[in-house]
Amino acid sequence: VEPISLGLAIAGAAASALTGIISYPRLYCYFRECCLQRHELRVANALQESLDRRLFGQHLVSKVVVRAVRGFLSNSQAKKPLALSLHGWTGTGKNFVSKIIAESIYKRGLKSNYVHQFVATLHFPHAHSINLYKDQLQSWIRGNVSICPRSIFIFDEMDKMHAGLIDAIKPFLDYYELLDGVSYRQAIFIFLSNAGAEKITEVALDFWRNGKAREDIQLTDMQNALSVSVFNNRNSGFWHSTLIDRNLIDYFVPFLPLEYKHVKMCVRVEVESRGYAVDEDILNRVADEMTYFPREERIYSDKGCKTVDAKLDYYYDL
Ligand SMILES: Nc1ncnc2c1ncn2[C@@H]1O[C@H](COP(=O)(O)OP(=O)(O)OP(=O)(O)O)[C@@H](O)[C@H]1O
Image (cartoon, rainbow, N blue to C red; front, side, top):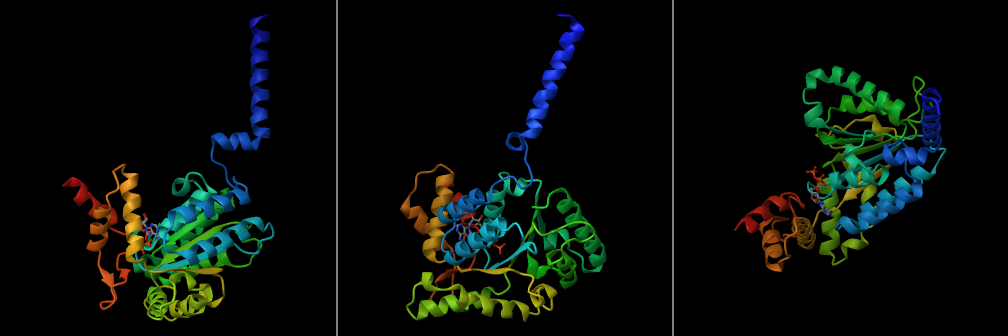
């Protein structure tokens, strides 16, 4: 075989292999991350499994989040992007759940090129730069949704976010078919905040004081109270915001305050993930070290499961 025809043959083989790869997007996506990669059923199953196994004491969260994500992904005619608003006391799992949602849709989770996280105090710290932030945020969202319609945007500390900035997101959440040639209908927006945490605690405490099980708390016990309390809270960026006013939030997701037994479960997970032997005595001692409220009953951990890992260092360094 002449060198030149051998070269052509190799080039031909390479070209057909490449065409093969391109015509098999699944194969291509196996090696490189793709937008809209996973089938909705797989996402819903992964999400359900992960929440059941890893999330403690949040029966309402699992129910709402799985239903919302499954319904949205399987609806090819969605009229608007999915907007979830996660509310609750610190350390109860809001960031944890948004990470689990991201991981169920994109294997790389928060590290995926299609998942974008903003923290109000970190990314938008100065009230006087609000107009600049607005422009930057809008073009960031537009640019990323143009590249991948199924982009996920997570906004942490929404209660510390300037109301004007929240309103800047509004057009993307609305029922438009196209905005400047871009459709936002497949995107997912997740908002996290502590707003409404007192209201959630009030309802949970009421159940507890009446001797009713925590798991009997229904979504209806929470949702109206929550949306009204968030809307009327002047300290929260949601106040006066058109997101709630115009019903652009699809689901308010209430996170219940965590009890002693949940804190212990978190300690156990941390111990196991570090590869240490589980020692019940240490689990109790770490859980005992947390502070609990209200002052009389001392039921709920005031930091949820936060700082559990730091406390563990102390015991295993002894
Ligand atoms: N309900 C829970 N079940 C299991 N682990 C939890 C739960 N809540 C919190 N954790 C653990 O505690 C860590 C801290 O929680 P997370 O950051 O999700 O709290 P948060 O609600 O977002 O708090 P904040 O309002 O302060 O941002 C998580 O990474 C997770 O390991």
